[in-house]
Length: 90
Image 1 (cartoon, rainbow, N blue to C red):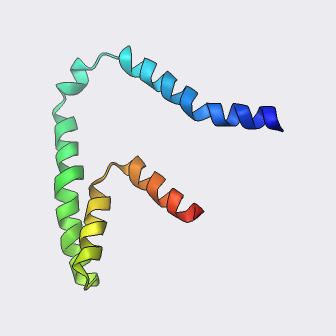
Image 2 (cartoon, rainbow, N blue to C red):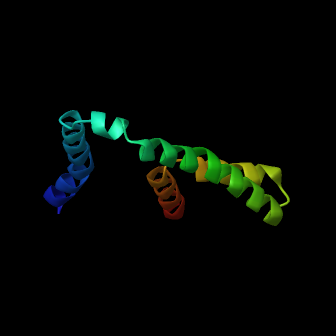
């Protein structure tokens, strides 16, 4: 069992090393010249959280809760998923 646990704990760091290598050897110029990238970032990081703040204000009386939900909505998706998964483990 111990060798399997050791391999399991090495999986995340090894996958990050692999992703770093892929990122290093990728051609980023076409991606950075893509207009859709910047529109998507604007919508996900600005428009959606502002709209979500307005909608959440209708359902929650506490502005602290509304602001916290808007901040979570503005974060990148995988960060929010990891944060909620960690909260469920406690």
